[in-house]
Amino acid sequence: MHHFILTQLNAFAVPWAPLIALAAVLAVILLISLIAHGLLHRVLLPLLRRMAEKSSRHWPTSLIDNKLFSRFALLMQGVFLQIQLELFLSGLEPAYSALMILSEVWIMVFGLLMFFSLLDIFLELSEKSVIARQMPLRGIFQSLKLIAALLVTLMIISVLIGKSPLVLLTGLGAMTAVLMLVFKDPILGLVAGIQLSANNMLKLGDWLDMPKYGADGAVVDIALTTVKVRNWDNTITTIPTYALISDSFKNWRAMSESGGRRIKRSVNIDTTSIHFLGEDEIASLKRAQLLTPYLESKMQEVSAYNIGLDISTPLNGRRMTNIGTFRAWLEAWLKAHPHTHKGMTLMVRQLASGADGLPLEIYVFTNTTVWLEYERIQSDIFDHIFAVLPAFGLRVHQTPTGNDLRNLRIRSAE
Image 1 (tube, rainbow, N blue to C red):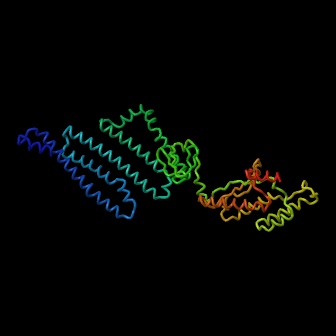
Image 2: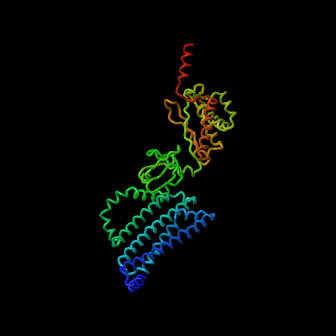
Image 3: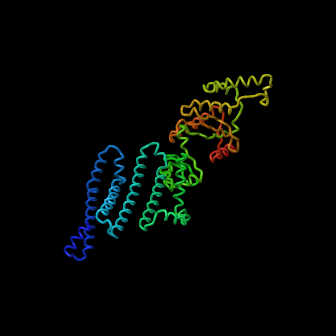
């Protein structure tokens, strides 16, 4: 085309014929590019957008929202430009080389943006999958974006300076220390994200407890350099991703998956209320259905042991105590409780006594991991324990309050 226009201009002896011919060819290229842009962005893309809006599926809308088609259209404009350059400007320097370099950079930039869109689409669609949603894909995709951006930047520089990318890579060897310093957090985050994913250490929605960073809540985002945790008071804590590898943290996911949550709490018994059971107390406790098997078995065991012993003094033989009987009843009651997990550890044990009395620890698992239900079950259990203690002649130890001291002074005065 350039040769034809130049020939016609020379035939009419038009001054500045080479420049006018070049301008005419560039005008034709620009006109064709504008027409292609109009067809792609004013006709094709709106048509695809309407089709996506009518679709009942999510993925067509995701393609539009993440600008995949618009970026593909812009990439194709770069391809069309290269085709026009080959047809209309081939061999015409320096315009051909300059525009060809421009088109190559254009194609690489929008090719990179298309890759970003594909990753965003895959990430958005993965959130609909139960399995994929649990994987830290956001951090992995951000790592891929960073790597792709570095590679494309390297290729663009090589195109602009006319050197092979390998030459640039060789020169970058001397800048390794600087690059490591600049990209320290992304590199550490990339490694941490891969380890978290490969070892199944953390997923979205996990209950994360990391006191060092003040985090105690659900994981809402796992990115390349940070992990966001929504605490139970609705504040957000941001933790460096690599800290999850270098530091320790508690993940409550196993508890949620097990179907049972532990209750581990003690009741402090006043040791002055502990005593041997009398006949009247034993007779009263026999009316408890959960205690009947224990009392009958224990009484036979004690009677057999005491044969031939002088039991007129408590120093000889064995006797049943109210604390031991209460512990046996409590264990039987917890086993029969409808909200305790029957497949997990259940025990009632004594801990070392101290200034606060004798701790009687309840160690049991509920059959639910829902927080509200768990707290309700735990409260119901201890409400009942505190209320039933007087039936065994036991008292809860507590530090005297001002009212206790006031009553003591009144009694002393009387």
